[in-house]
Length: 500
Image (cartoon, rainbow, N blue to C red; front, side, top):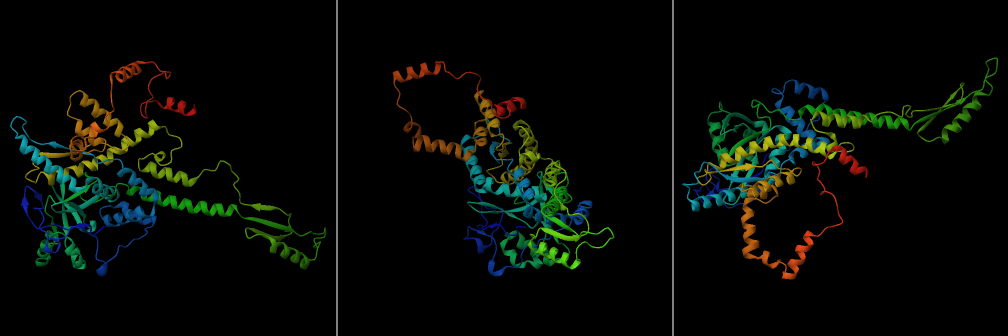
């Protein structure tokens, strides 16, 4: 659990030129603008981890409300211990580029002052740039997909906005404001962690004193819009239910099968040699038993460690533990595939041996809808904060449903719409990784400041233009239709192309 992830703030000032009016920052941090993780000279505690048994997991899942904290700790431990679980979470986090566009909100184009709107628009772009959405929000997505809820508060300065994660065990949701859950904090947390209080915004210090004056009120709601909760399972607000908690049993099965396979492989490397003692018809030994023991000891002394020996009156034979059935299945691989299937994700996304690209593309689109739902919750929280500012009340952020897997498809759709006159130029640029803050500024830099268009413009003449025109209409030896990309061809055609 990340307890401290703080950007120091500035003094409490409200104006249209800065956005630090919602948090009064203590004078100790007034001159600072750096991330304070922890005080190593005054380390008050360290995280603890527990390896829960499969029976414990079964008990927790039978009553997720009562065992909310235990489930959260279990998935946090598995996230660090299991590469399969970590990769699954990171896969879902990567299903959104967090590309966004800023759109006008509640304005009348016929009555709006263009200059005022442009000034406010620039301020909105600045505040969004200071949030570092594409670096901070993936951390929020990771926590939501792992634990279900991210509880956070904002440190706001003149040049940065940093999200601080709050300790989940001391947070809950009791109200919703502007479609965004508010955070109710258990201030008894600072009874045993008083040294950490100074690393939280001024609001926490004020409300902790309120709690101390009347300890009957442990749970106090934090101020909005600077504090918020992002929940993956937004239809269940009473408690946190990790989205992939049901996979914990499958993850334990993988480890069990690995241990069984290791034991089985070790047994397959062992063999045993038996030495026969000859016997007469009357049942007496055909060789002196003492001499037989000497021969057996000589044999046993030269055998490798993996081969055992035994002295017996039966026939000499070799006994090994090799596989008798060539059709044995790989139980570890089956357990891994079962784990991904239980998550609702194709295992071929991580170990592609059979599925076609089209099948995988459709599977990814279904998974992307899960991540996009959380991104929309993040959008609501950002818009609530943005529209609380005087210059942001007529703007809103809209996150696009774009990922590395559909960037070309979405970009082509926006570009086609723009060719018909629809206002999708900003959306197209955002889908290709160019935000609105960079769109016009880069165009100004390259065109007016650096003059790159003229610098790299080739020299043209009438003969060159004529030649180019002829060449553009000339026939070529390359026949057939243009090559189609993944997702545009059928599975059978893709298989034929691979065979060729």
